[in-house]
Length: 203
Image (cartoon, rainbow, N blue to C red):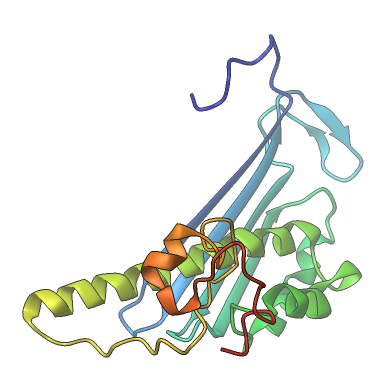
């Protein structure tokens, strides 16, 4: 267990999120997310009656089909369980994601299309780990393809050293001052005691 031993306690709520990335036969990718909320105790619900312990309060699914450029080409959203009978009515709005690219500006674009009453809080929340899963899926496969090409003796096209890496400054490890960036993107590395470039976009 990576955390320290906890104080004596009793489980009250469980939220389980599972995200998976699938490579399709047609060259696209399916990124699927599933969210389930349960309580360890039963409670009354005006619309669903008494909800037994362990019975889902929220049980929701999302599938984003994306191309190699991380652009959404198809969406499917399903609400199997929600606290209110009208919860599933909003799922058609998630078709507004079609045509958006997962990358810079993704969260803002999602909020513009599905924020507030235009969406479902829980399905919108699910899009964040799904976007990360999309990155892990696509970039992992690209790395594998490069390794396999090198093993076959094929020369993969070199990456443009002047093109800003998409992950630069996205986290602590990919900070432009980190030793990780110094090794994998040396053209984009700077010493911690030098002035930062203007948003690292003018190089």
